[in-house]
Length: 144
Image (cartoon, rainbow, N blue to C red):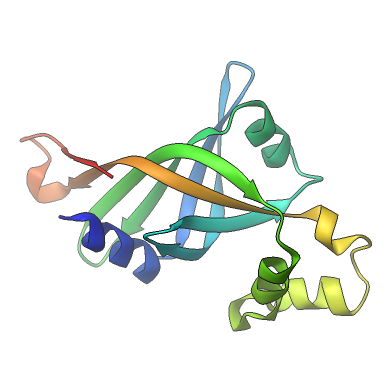
């Protein structure tokens, strides 16, 4: 698997798990990818959530994607950067897969939308690829 294959797997399987650290306790939750390309991996959450606080305290995270049809698991590690661009937040809220955000923004269900929507970008530094057919021969690690 090469770098382009990694991005294609993520885009084809946009639901992923995000691992953070809360003190000395690992925390994992499901997330939804917005974009994955050469510029980075972009997703969002709310500034009022525990995950946001965990990222602020330690931006080093790991994402885990699964392609169940091909039997491939992909773990991507790196540091997150918060993106504060209002135009990007508007773009995300308008995206067809983000109808729930559109309601929050346009129908006033979330006051101070731009400060409560946190957008993060991961600059991946490594990826670990695992598949059942390689289960006993080890994992494949890629520098990104």
